[in-house]
Image 1 (cartoon, rainbow, N blue to C red):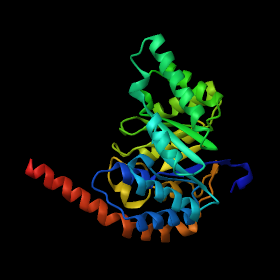
Image 2: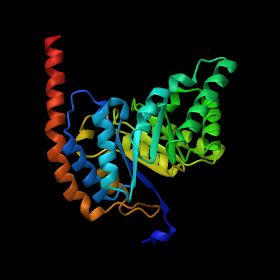
Image 3: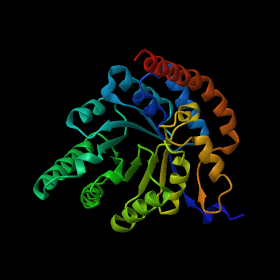
Length: 288
C-alpha cells in the first residue's frame, strides 16, 4: 500500500446543513442540527457549512453555536454573493464564509456589463475580508456560464485573497469527462485550489467527484446519509469514504472506523424527514 505521505490530501467540506436549509419540506430542529454537526466533526470532516444567516436570527445563532463547539475545524456560513447577505453573515461572528454566484450572472453580457459586474463582486469579496478570515467563492452550475467570464472572476477573486473556488453541478446532468475538463482548465489557468460540489440526478455525483479529484481538485463538498437518497442531492460522505479509504492516490482526515456508527445516528435524524418530504411531495402531486 502507498504510504499516506505520498498521497495527495483532499479537503472534505460537508454541506448537509445547507442542503437541509435549501430543501423545502425538511424541517430539522436546532438541537438536531447541533447533533449533526457533532457527528460530522467526529467523522473527521475538515469544514462544516453550518447555516445560512439570511434565513433569520435562529439560523445565525445556530452557526455561532456550532462554531463554539468545534473550534478545531473550519465552520463556515453560506451566503449568496449580495451586500444584504454579507451583512447578515457578518453578525454570525465566525471566521469563514462561502459566497455563491449563479452561472446565469456570468453569461450573455456585453464586455462592459461583464466587467462592471465582476468588479462589483470583487469589491464585495474585499468587503467580506473585513468580517472574515477565510472567504471561498462558488459558481453554481459552472458549466452554464461563459468560461471566459468565469476565468476573469476567478482571477479577481484569487487576487484579493479567496482561498478556494467551488465549481458545481447542482442540476446533476454533467458527465465525468465534462467535470474533469472544467476542473483541469481552472486549475491549469488560474493556479487556484478548486472544490467540486455535484448533485446526483443521473446517479453520477460520486463518479463526477472522483473525476474532479483526478483532474486536480483539492476539495470535495458532500452531504450525509439519507439526505442524498433524494436524487437531487450531493454524493454521500459514506460513499466517498468507501471510495477513498483504500485509495493509492488520495488521503483524507476522515475517521473511516467511525463513519459506519455515525451513519446509523445520522440516519435516525434524517431518514424520517426525507421520507416525510417525499410523501408530502407525492400528496401535492396527487392534489394537483
